[in-house]
Image 1 (cartoon, one colour):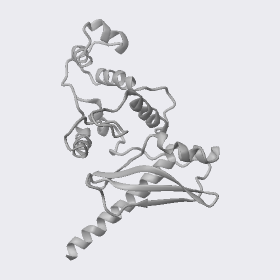
Image 2 (cartoon, helix red, strand yellow):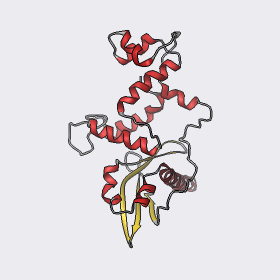
Image 3 (spheres, helix red, strand yellow):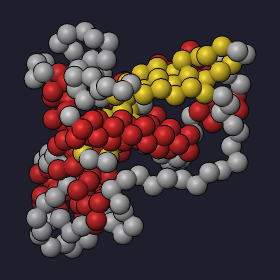
Image 4 (cartoon, helix red, strand yellow):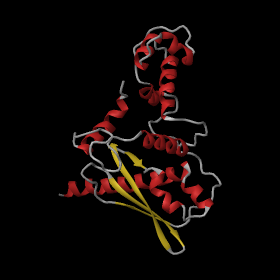
Length: 235
């Protein structure tokens, strides 16, 4: 089942594709092509690194996690068998290590994350560590969103008097006071990252750095929205 929290993002994607072709089209712009498995694998790897997760994980890990969390929430094994598409119940039992469960209504585990103790609906911000400094940077956010409601974010790092661009970042506001920062695949930044010292590159790839960028981008977009609201009232 589709998690309710994903519906706003899915609708935003659908508006972006204008309801034509695939919901997840190929990133190279080719018509009639969807995202390749390799692209998904790279995206999961990058998300794992940004989240600071050291454990190995692949796209298939979500399938196992899906079943595991359903079991922990008390979902009947027969529902899980049907959702996973297993012909034999024994197949489901092998890797989920099922105990005796009662039948409950099936809900996506993602919908339950917001109800976890200490959860505020936002990703936790990690405490600063003793990582090396990124150095001088330039951060710019467009004052107007594009037709899909996304703000272009331009990020650059100074190196020997030259501003090296880190392109492809976008920010959206799926709901009020909630700013989401979209980071491109690492391949897009690789030419720039190769020009930087190892310590500086490590810092740019750290979860703490992206948390700081997201906070700064969010503040700027909220200021933009507040200014627009004030102008509307004056008009």
